[in-house]
Image (cartoon, rainbow, N blue to C red; front, side, top):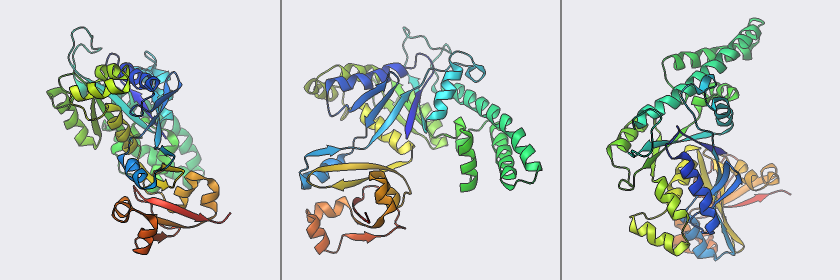
Length: 363
């Protein structure tokens, strides 16, 4: 799964993305980001639980979970009708699973704002409006075909018509589709249309150097807006991140301490994006490696096994599971088993974030 980074002109989107990609060149474990193409990269998801598990196994290597980020072309008002790079923007955002919107939350007379003033909520409204207009167009184009098929008595087409009309009514109330209540069947139909406002959103507040914790009035207005929609806000100073990315590991650590940051903002951003995508991690552990595997929240044990290899899912028998708390308490898997804390779960087991697993399967 992947998340797309979007934003209006001059909000710091490119500065942030370039800082992330540049940071990989310094070969620091704190900045595990690599560029796939000029506008794509894979970023590791920092997870302190990996270090805890590794302490007891002393593995040859540690492999964290990872996700793909895409730097999507900037948007301007009118993108839904082709203004600026509108068509390119919309086509790219259809391909991602979540949206990371960089919002300007700093004042700088030398950096002109496209709207003439810095207003985070207004910036969000511009992009949200363009996405809603694009969704309306998609639904309008789909409705006629669905209605014609429905008139022939096709039951599935009738359901599509009902869902399309429900979505249209929601958008006409100027509400993004991610806020609309859907059952599983309706959600499946909506997913088939690739609707933009149905995607989850994470807001990145690009803050000034004197507001790294994001407590200033601009960020607070963004937080208030995000709270109403259930979205997260991550404060990031793209300027400082770009400077940190240029430093070697020791100098980075010193600079982070000097500005009062416990870790790079990349770490917070990666974890928040992971959550926004509806993902969680389980672990496998041994002397060779300790590894985090990415699965959707709600995945079953066989589905989780299939992430390692499809044969694991096909031949799944059972999974042996324990938690990090048990590992810390008993220190060895043999002791966990002797204490009766190693659980045996079957095909119906719903994986929990942080499970440490051994899968048994038929070859």
